[in-house]
Image (cartoon, rainbow, N blue to C red; front, side, top):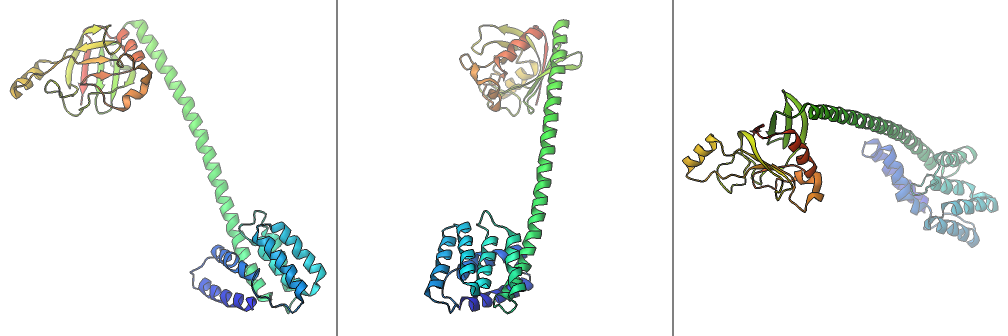
Length: 330
């Protein structure tokens, strides 16, 4: 009974496959997943007695429990005890060897089972289905090899990328070492002659004779777009200024005062009828929060000042005497 049902469903699947709606790999998956429960359970075509059916049922139960090796062993015993059922046994074993959930699945052994049916049992009702299984297993094996080859290529590329990342890391360390040498040389020479601040890039650069000595990440005022216009607008100024004072007792570890407002800033504020504000500084992190470190620059948190870490403001302070030009660009 189930052989007839299997043949009917297999015929329909073959028709779909020829029409291009089912690839080889999915076709095998269809057979194994959908057909196997039908093959390994249900009504039987055998005419042997109750003991034979009972033994097959036991092998089938082992399969349903996921005990594939034990099920295969049981089928081998059935073949020895009931030789007339050998073609059926071989077919059942071929299905188990190819079953996707079987972690020890072996396509070669599955093929051998179906090939033995064709060779040793030419009149078996399983012959045609065995030929179909051989065709689809071969297709799956080819695709599996292709997938394995692609996975190997992917792994090779991953290793190459990892190698490049290591090279980049080494080069980055060399760059940092060179920057430190340049910076140390600058310290020996005395000082920077300009501070360049680029608001959009959130970057502060110390410059000496046109050369960048060092670059720092910064945080700006909470309303960073556009120049400062009035007191309390939380904007960072834009224009040319200078360091005109410093405060070692600042609430922000250490601060360098910028000569804001300049004449242009005062004129704009007067036209707007507002106070231009003041107290714009380059400073460290607020006292008590130095543990924040570099992560402070992830958010614009000042009231219009330019913020760096505590260690960085210490470093900058040593290199920029009062009178150093500060250019702040949009």
